[in-house]
Length: 83
Image (tube, rainbow, N blue to C red; front, side):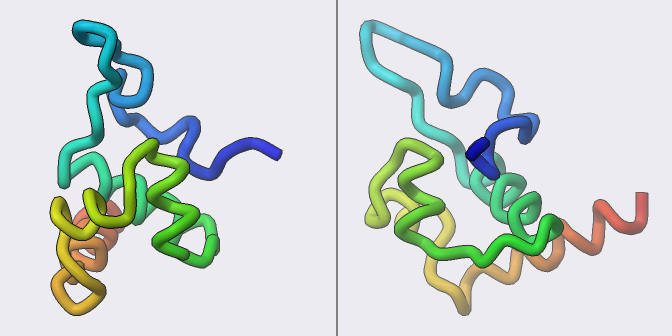
């Protein structure tokens, strides 16, 4: 099964190697990936989502906050729908 995150324009987030370390996604990239999952009707389970992004749940929450703080995802969806 193909990853729901793959195909999302994340630049070279998961594929960029710098000094033998994978560069982890920025908050904006995480939000775009989350919006992509939601647009596709995929339940946004934080454990699975973080795993697909190649980061821990702790890193996910540090970057974008908890569910109440992630209204940015909804805002992003509205912006995308408007364009």
